[in-house]
Length: 444
Image 1 (cartoon, helix red, strand yellow):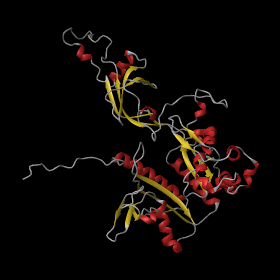
Image 2 (image 1 turned 60 degrees about the vertical axis):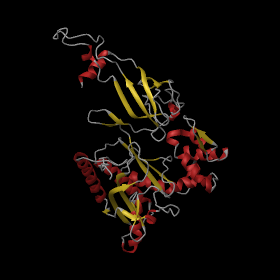
Image 3 (image 1 turned 180 degrees about the vertical axis):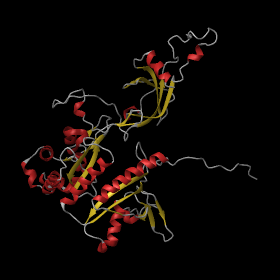
Image 4 (image 1 turned 45 degrees about the vertical axis):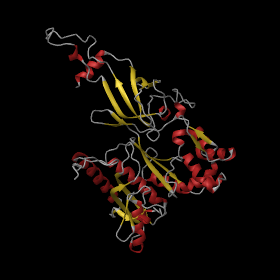
């Protein structure tokens, strides 16, 4: 007879999911209601579709595996057909329009808000379940439909509290980009690699993109990315069209659409301070065919204490060292690591053992003997960060090797390090004062 005790389920949250409290729910509800009013003022109507769709309707065809799991959460129904939780709101819209096309007004303008699910590895700020708010116009290829969406986005952002100058809407055209590739004589099979290289322009700038258009590029970690393999003449032609206001741009298909959109926006009072054309905006290589745009926030996100949580910016390697070749001056420097490429590590922050320079010191209100040095121990003398993110080049750092971590001090690899989990100890902190430590103690 077994004497093993039954295992009680452990209270734990699945990876990539989160609980939300009343305050967050109320804030989101108020924000979504504000956006709804803006969208409805433009004549867009609400639509709801079920959380589940047939897997093949989502574009997920995986006949060689037992369960479709490439980006979606799936189950098999009692009729042996696969169902999947929607991973966005566009695929359900396409299914709905295909089913009801004859009965829908043209153009069909709808908005939808709801949860979507992604079966992928979660990361910082990336969840497996989150809210999307979509607005689409179906049945019109007029540039005015795209201009309307751009104006509606600006109105929604300002309605929820953003000020002009705190956001920037960037627009481009995939039709126009394809025209650039055609004019440069790029083969159809290389088009995707070329567009992926151009998509990195805001981060790698011209030199990095030129390398990716050619043989390839090695990044700072030593990883090599194979390039598109274009000739030097093709690279020069693409970069001339991509970075210059060339006369022959006007002959490229898609140029007139951008011109019309910009004209409509200008006539309606939406200037380049809010919406501007940016050829480096390249998104959705598999499905975008016309205008494409994105919104960028231009202000730091702070918490209730005024501490900066997020800074929205672009990486500009040309400014390393404090000055750029074109004369731009660097106002400040931010040290960061790439979340997509960083390694996980444990970092132990050792600080002063005592809160006073003389551990035996007592105040005038205390008599000697009532307290000893143990009363002046620093409770913050050791802080262990178990989920620190480090540069990938440190993954195989040998034990006792030393490094400087920017703005934190000098660190040494601890013998406790294991494959896949390196441990760093801080050996020397940056210059500090007892006054700062005492001030920190006062906040406890």
